[in-house]
Image (cartoon, rainbow, N blue to C red):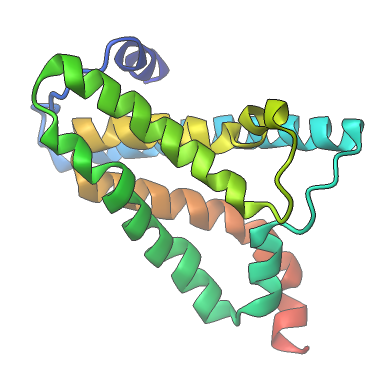
Length: 184
C-alpha cells in the first residue's frame, strides 16, 4: 500500500479505484489507517524531540487546552466527528472539481500542504519559521494519506479515516486524563 501511495504522490491522478467491493475498500482503509498512524506518530516524536532539544517554547497546544476545557463527550464530538467532517470538506472535497490532470496535481499538493500548515495554529506561540515544517509534518503525512483515500475511494472514506486517526491519537491521553475528567 505504501508503494501505491508513493506512486500517487509522485504523480497524482484524479482516478477512483474501480474496485467497489466493500471488503476490498475496508482492507485499503485499514492499511492506510496503519500507515497514517505510524507516519504521524514518528513525525510527531521527531518534532517533539526537536522542540525539546532546541528548548523552543511553543506554549500550550490546542489539544492540551481542549482536554482541560471540554467535557469528555464534547471533546470526542469535536475531535472525532466535527473536525474530520469540516476539514475533509474544506481540504479534500474540492479535489473532485479538478478534472484536468495538470491542475489536479497542483490541487492535490496544495490541499495537503494547506492542511498541514494550518495546524501550526494549534500552537499557542508561533515558532521560528524554519521549524514550522517539522512541527506540522504529522499533518502533512496525514494529508497525503487522506488525499489518496479521498481520490481512490471517495470523500466518506477520507472522513472515516480522519475520524479513526483522530480517535486513535486522542485515546491514550484521554484514558490517562479520564479519572480527572470523571472526578475533577
